[in-house]
Length: 546
Image 1: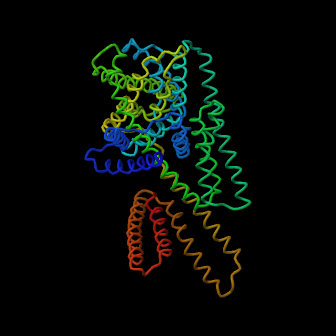
Image 2: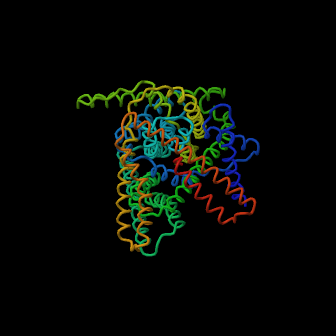
C-alpha cells in the first residue's frame, strides 16, 4: 500500500507542478518547478523516495529513450551525424579529461581517478531534460535535433568513462585497451540488440496480425514492452541497455513506415505514449528534487573532504565546475565548427558561418538531468580493501548541484541568446509537405476511380455514385491545383486556408457544445453523445495538428 500511495502522490505532484509552472509570473521550464516542488515535499514531510539507481534506470529510461529515438527526425539525425558523433563521443572524452584535471586541481584531496569519475558522470547531457527545456524555450529545429541526437548517444560514453574511473579507484589499476574494448562491446552490442529485438517483434507481430486480425490494445501494449525487452536483454549480455532502447526506438520508426497498423491503433498508441512521456518526465524531476535536501544536509560534512571548513567553498566548486562544462563545450563546438568550415572550403562548398551567439546557445543547452544523478548514485560505498570510497558524498553533492545549475542557466540564458538570432537557413519543409499532399491526392483520386469501376452499380444508382465520387474527388483536385500557384496567388491561398480552418474550428466547437448541452438535458444518450464528441475531437485535432 505504501508503494501505491507514493506512486499516486508522485502523479499528483506532476499535475500540481504543471499548474504552478503556468501560474508562475516568471517563465520557468516545468522541470525547474518540478525539482523545486520535490524539494518542498521532502522538506515538509521529512521523507523522500529512496532512489534505487538500478530500479530507476529500468522503470524510466527504456520507455523515454525509446520514444525519443522513435520520434526524432531521421533525416536530421543522419544529415548531422558527424556533428552529433563529435559531441556524443569526442566531447565526452574531452570533458572527462579537462574537467577531471580541473577538479583534481581545485580539490587536491580528491584522488585523480575520483575526479575523473565525477567529470564523467556530469559529461553526458540528458535527452529528457533537453526535451523538457525545449517546451518553454524556442530552440531552432536543427539545433534541437542535434542536441537530442547527442543526448541519446552520449549517455553510453559518459557512463563507460565513469565505470572505468570508479574501477580505477576501487582496484587501483586502469587499462586503456580494456576500456576501449568494453566501450565497443557496450555500444555495438547495445545498438545491435535494440535493432534485432524491434525488427523481430514487429515481424512476428505482422505475421500474427495478418492471420488473426489486429487488436488496438494489444498493439499498444507490444510497443510498450519492446523497450523493456531490448534494455533487459542488453543488460543481461553486459551491453548498453540505454543504447539498446535508443536503437529500438529508431528501428521502430522505420518498421512503422510499412503502414500496416490500423489508424485507430496509431491514434490510441500516440495518446498512450504522449501520456507516458509527460508522466515519466514529471516524476523523474520530482524525484530528483526530493533527493536534494538530504544531499544538501550533508554539506557541512562534505566540505571536510575539500580541506576547508566553510560550506561556502562548495558554492565556489559548483560554480567552477558548471562554468568549466560550458567553457569546454564552447571550445569543442567552436573548434569542430572551424574544422567543418575548413573541409567545406576545400570541397568548394559555400557554408554560412554560424554566429558566436549560436555556439554559446549550443554550449548552454547541454543540460544535465536525472541520468547524471542516477549514475552518480551507483558509485560504491567502499573500495576493494574495505575502506570508504574517497569523496563519495562530495561527488554526489557536486553532481546534483551541477544538474540544478545547468537547468537554471539554460532556462534563463537560452531565451536571451536565441532572441532575434540570425540562423543558417534550414530546409524548407512546406515544399515537401505540399508535394507529398499532391502525390497523396493523385493516388486518392485514382483509388476512387478504380473503386467506382469495380462496384456493381445499378442503373438507378449511376448518377448517385457519380455525384458522390465527384464530391470526394473535388477535395483532392483542389489540393493538386494549389501546387501550380506561386507568389501572391500562393500567399492568398494560404490565407484562405487559414481563414477556412478557423471558421471550421469555430463550427466544430459550437457543434460539440450543443452535443454536451443535449446530453446534460437527457435529450441525447451517453453512447451517442460520446460518439459525436469523439468525431468532433478528431476533426479538431486534425485541423490543429495536435
